Image (cartoon, rainbow, N blue to C red; front, side, top):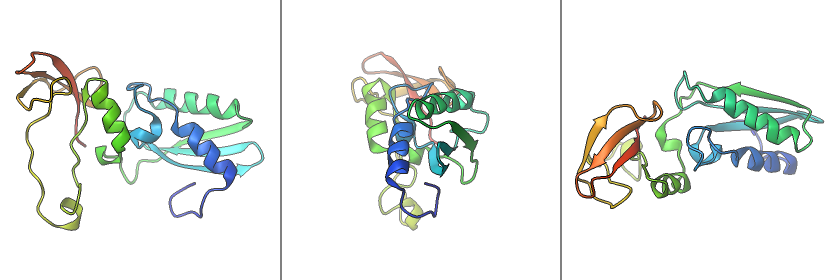
Length: 174
């Protein structure tokens, strides 16, 4: 289902569920739906489907892998023609990561990004909560230090906790 479209058919809903469960190739602890990169899905005709993805950043090297994984899942469920299109506007932001995705990141030892426009503040024009500390996903301490602006992927930074001494990835806010 694409933005502004009517409610998905039963087939579209099932295909959205299947595609949404595909793990992110760079962060396999969360799915494409939990990461918030699955923008839409439309059944074009018998065996034909179009999927829209928004990358976490324009030059995301995982897009080809995502498209291949989506195509594999959909063809194994009867689709014969799968088009995976990249949609750049509106841009993806870390606010698109679901609460479940954030929980899974923390559980896997990756500090999830802080919400940019959460609650009544932010987008609604109210006061914006200011939290500079990044919480350690291992012990919960906010006494953490930046080691490198880049980590195992461009969307993460490498930090170390001063309390437990453990290094950890932090999914940067975008």
